[in-house]
Amino acid sequence: MRNDSALDIRWPAKFNEIPKEVFHRADVYRLELERIFHGPEWHPVAHVAEIPARGDLKTGYVGAVPVLIVHGDDSVVRVFQNSCAHRGTQLKTCARGKADKIECPYHRWTYNNRGELIGVPGQGDFPRDFRKEDYGLRVLRSGEVCGLIFVTLSDEAPPLADYLDNTAEHIARAMGGDGRLKLLGYQKVAFAANWKEYSDNEGYHGPLLHAAFRMLKFAQADGAQFMTPHAHKVNSATLAVPEPSFIEDGSVVEGRDPKLPPHNIIVSLFPVTIITRNLDVISVRYATPISPDETEVHYAYFAHADDDAALVQHRIRQASNLIGPSGFISLEDGAVFNRLHVGSASDGTVAFQKGVRGPIVAPYALDKGDEAGNLIRWEHYRQAMGFARD
Ligand code: FES
Ligand SMILES: [Fe+2]
Image (cartoon, rainbow, N blue to C red):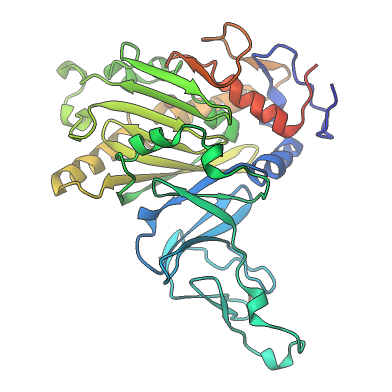
């Protein structure tokens, strides 16, 4: 089969095997930026609750490209390339901020918060045909689902609704039912692992690696998992209230949201964003690959707009104890991601087994505790990268 990637990757004929070199090679990483992160995929970059007022802004990245998400004074949320239209200087370096105007520090070109160029020092010495209207900030193609703002760098990405397959209803379920949220805060962590090791997290390891999932009886819970044609994964399970002997202060793991009983909903969008509802914790995990060996993840936590003060306090307490880099549920993941990365620095392949009964084609339903669904992500990856199978 033709290999159109120009890289000498040999993809195993066995459909459940992945070559280890894709987790380490710098040339593979560069091609991933080009074909996946800068290619025809959509990436969540903010929720409107992170920029609720006119003039609010947030920065982020799509692969290596810096982006600026701005709530304009005309109430329109736009995603710009975070780069001056003059010589390309990064305009904003703050994580979040507020701006009526956006001024570039280098030569003081100034934009309004709709991205229009409104001020240019020394314009009298510019070419006579220079027009400010031609030098607005570059607006990227964006869309919104349940308040979550997605962006793509490619004109070839399908319409957002098609791209998301049928995950939108699950995104809504995870995000308080209707996406009317209030930002609580962030936890940010850099994992010493490749982005694919981070995003290969699955249901198989849940109750085996994490004591917290044993406590919440994940293995015994009702649940389901399915994969969609665009390689998104939805894993949903009803959790059990833990036995008192398991944890001294059981209030940390109570489910108090009257609209949704104790639940675990994980929507893993290709390539790296994960939207979760773990008990009463509503979170979006924005992930950015930094290099083949490092992945930065920003956990944004939310309350629902209708919550009373007590429920907000409960969500904050549960968020900081349960999820994120030091939470009961995900504390161990960071260590394992790094050990995966160290351990995979050798020849050969890794293999998925749990739930594998033959070649897997989306849409596909599987047990919540299976790892086989990730093979659909890998097949999507292999095709996007142009790697031919042996
Ligand atoms: S690079 Fe921004 S004003 Fe010159
Ligand atoms: Fe995990």
